[in-house]
Length: 415
Image (cartoon, rainbow, N blue to C red):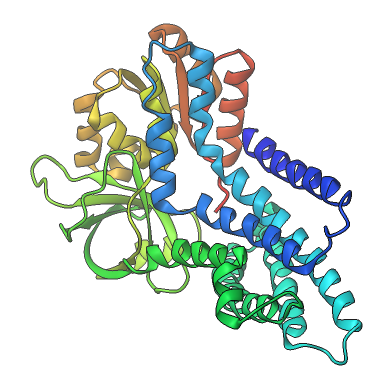
């Protein structure tokens, strides 16, 4: 995947910088290594910043459909930006390890152990813990642990990094006055960028009222009244029952035409959190930041698209279908659609997709989703496939279609 290529590419660029650095006598200076570490970590944070993601995605999807398909296909991989985050986070941690080694060597030459060395060790140990808990296998086994270590650990790293950076830049042999050392140190400005990027979504943290409809025990349709936010088509937003953890991201669905204010989300049973949410719906949820571009926005780059969804994957698709500004055909594989999702939602889908392929697994059994997608491609002459399903089915469809030389896209599941 491009996601992995981006991550490896960033690591290789940093390895090249290390190789070039070893050719200079001052390459192991602690302040230089600290700057390189913080440059990577600042970029890792900024790569995930909601406003940056929206800007980059909007820019990439503005290309006209008259451009060559190969070029549009490459631009549509913009949502693999998480690979940059991973590559820079890993590289930043590696640079911090080198910084601690250099700083330790420098401290051993002095009369005592400086305070900056203590904070350096605490900081690098916490960074390594965050990286270990963020491995795909560990994240899949224990998403809650990943979230807690990533968020609370990340905030702790930020605090320790501020203390450590100020101590380091003001105690170096070449440092002048404290003010001059702080103002002129690149690492201080990098810390400011990381802090601002991290804090911005949390400045928009709020608790908002919701109403919940449960067409069945499998799904809840969450209705948000107008609270000063109108999500754009194809956006997603995290919600939680607690402001600090337990955040889960869902697609924003426009409100029905009969009641156009506010927006909706479809929460389907897919784990402990969603099961508890459906069984005992809350009256309020927490939201933060701004609505962020979802993967399926890449539809703008193609003349015609086949949308493939299984089960509640229809939620992220619905906003794009209702917008109806890119010709497309829906393939929806689900159990008893009306009984599971309700007549209102199914009627909305059929209003914009009267010829949709809706496969009822209760009546027709489990299909070959790849075969359904390919048949729809052949019949409609679409240029691309967008698939939102389980991890296994998404990979089968996306990789299978792309092996045929046709653009195909699906979620990354990296959060």
